[in-house]
Image 1 (cartoon, rainbow, N blue to C red):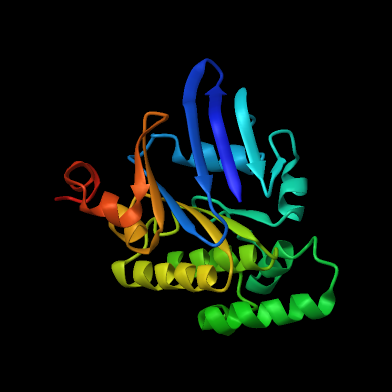
Image 2 (cartoon, rainbow, N blue to C red):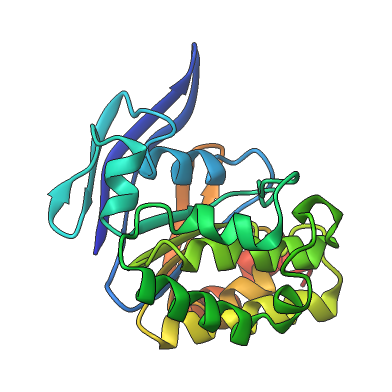
Length: 234
């Protein structure tokens, strides 16, 4: 569904992503793990059009999106849920969800999808009129994912969904990611919590200083002595 070939991304003179290649099969969960500063978020921003690649190719659903605008990418159902949630703090929960659905013209579909979001995240329903900036960190993460659902995703790019959350909430968020995948949404997950990421993913890539150093089925990487030592505290 998504394929990246020999991708190079720069921040000015800094060579942040150094020729990586990866693919995400339709219906799968693929995770990208690595330390802070390895370039994980840069890859997602480049896929979603926020950053531009200097070299390489990005194709989605069989078509190049390397030169596509952010809006064109969203219109194709490739939805980025960014690191740090990036909710609209001065808008209500409902208004944030409406922003997620701004490209959708079918009002009945929007209403049904909003109901599905509230079914998945009952706490958001309880706080529907509350300003998003007053929500807890976990509730804001739920809102960010809910806003992504309102964009009718075929594929979700999730950037550090567990960041700053208590362990119980982390488990809840990962359960929801798994449920969204089972409902037919393909997922590319960037995550520092390697244990949790590998527990739900089908395939995994390890990124170090802009290069992929290991890849394989997630269960195999979780059992690898090298990965255990570097990322799993083993």
